[in-house]
Amino acid sequence: MSGHGVPSSAHPEEDGGTATPPGSPRLHLLPAASRAPLCVSRADTLRHAETQMLLNDYSQLPVTTGDRTVHGLISWKSIGRAHVVGTAGGRVIDCMDTEVQVLAANMPLLKAVGEIIRHEI
Image 1 (spheres, rainbow, N blue to C red):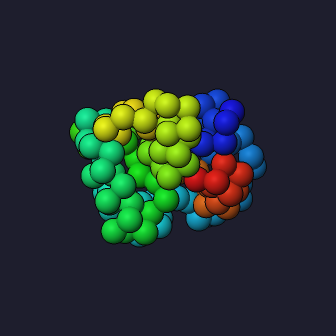
Image 2 (tube, rainbow, N blue to C red; image 1 turned 90 degrees about the vertical axis):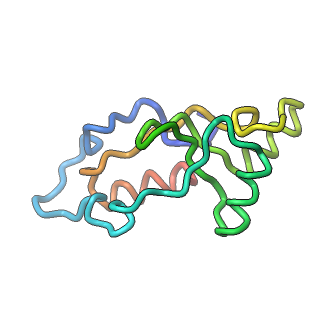
């Protein structure tokens, strides 16, 4: 993996196979878990995504369709990579990473933090 998302081998329905004590805090208990995230679509302009990241001080945004279909993410890193390799265009789809995995809502919070730190996202 190139370090731009949680490995696709993770399964959203599992907590990672680790023994977790009953009553351990889970991701879905965080207040942020009940709010819709700021997202962009594949068809949005790159300028729109960059503006949203700058205005909100975000380093990345999920790329979605509809309410819950995640197609990837766009980040300062993915934008820079696209410029270096010559694939950057005017749309989000030209600069997004597609190899990402959404963590399960029932994943233990400490395991989720570990995944976020390990994959820097």
